[in-house]
Image 1: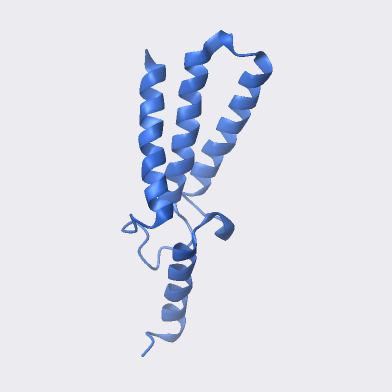
Image 2: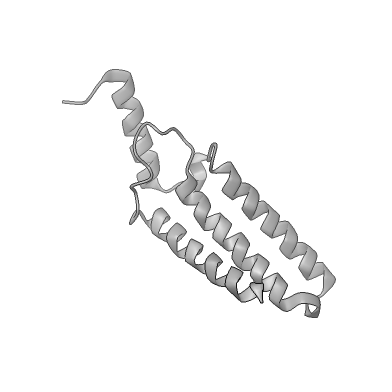
Length: 114
């Protein structure tokens, strides 16, 4: 059955996404890469995958309205994950990422600070 596997993979993605937001994994966010943030998108993709797995596991036992609401939320989460590949709004990023982006912009514009 694929439902439990999708939930487990989603949980792993969520764990990696939490590590990214917490700043424990910053290697992917090297300066000069712009405002796209695939590391943060992993969290949203994981949440969408976990929700998809739960929807598959629950199947017809859930009310139709709950299933439709789950699909809408899952689609929004996947859209956010895809958005992170191209651009990511600053309000969805943690302070360390915004500070790093601000520092890299000033270095590119004015040269390194003494």
